[in-house]
Amino acid sequence: MTHTHAKHDHSGGDDRGLDCKHDHNHDHDHSHGPGHHHGHSHHGHGHHHSHAPNNKKGLIIALTVTTGIMLLEFFGGLVTNSLALLSDSGHMLNDAASLALSLFAIWLSGKAATSSKSYGYHRFEILAALLNGVTLFVIAFFIAKEAYDRFFAPPEVASGSMMAIAVIGLLANLLSAWALLRKSDVKDNVNVRSAYLHVLGDALGSVGAIAAGALMLAFGWYIADPIISVLVALLILRGAWGVIAHTVHILMEGTPPRIDIAMVKRTLEGIEGVKDVHDLHVWTITSGLDSLSAHLRIEQGLDEQLVLQEAVRLMERKFGVAHCTIQIETSEVRHADLKV
Image (cartoon, rainbow, N blue to C red; front, side, top):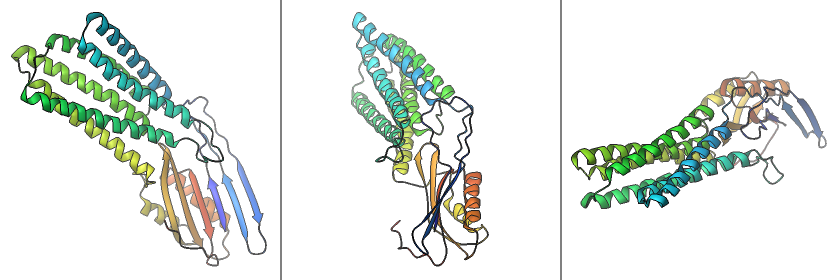
């Protein structure tokens, strides 16, 4: 019986510096008496870092901008006695908290693995994204609730002041969103995307406030405020649901959406000498780090290492999965049926 752990990615954090590659080939044979043989082969631990997004830098820029505007609005509200400014600084505080949480998650995920946490702290990024997604749901709920109350008795609103504050908030959020888009991996890193959605949600709120303020200032349509607020809440909910669904899928060890597991099985079964593929699993440890495990039953007398090398090569080349644990078996090997 042969096990291999192939191409382990031990990258710590998101700071990408030198473009480096390390190749190590280790073969360890452990004999446990007659007829019982385990070969552990670690092939090519490769680290390639070039032009990768710097998630940490993008979050730091966004957090600095958001915190600065939050403090400006807070002290401005105290000086001018403006409840609207103080209220908007509260929104900014929520954004700053979500950005800080995502930044902390990236720092923690870079810590080395331990004997009790063999995968390290990579999953904390997923937990942070889930928490950010849930808070977006809560924010949307309170926006919708307040809008419902205002539908029946729309209050008069100081439209001019509201628009001025919304413009300040919009510029700050657009700058933060730009920093995340340019410097960070908003598309594929669910942790960064959840923070980005917080910033984007506040930007949408500012756009809605400007539009509502213009309608109220021009036509006195105070009901525009709750109507636009509901539309913003629905947009926030749409983004939040995507983040929550994605993070729960990862935490449930679901197959990555980009992987067709039936195709993976057919590819492994297509290797010469492979008679059967079973106990096949593909899952995500954290964004950008997928893993695979499988048992391959091969014909008697074949070179197990050649089959193993071909399986490892195909999994990385065709499916981009570099972290593989593959067990080679012959028909003589018997093991209990696994529950999953």
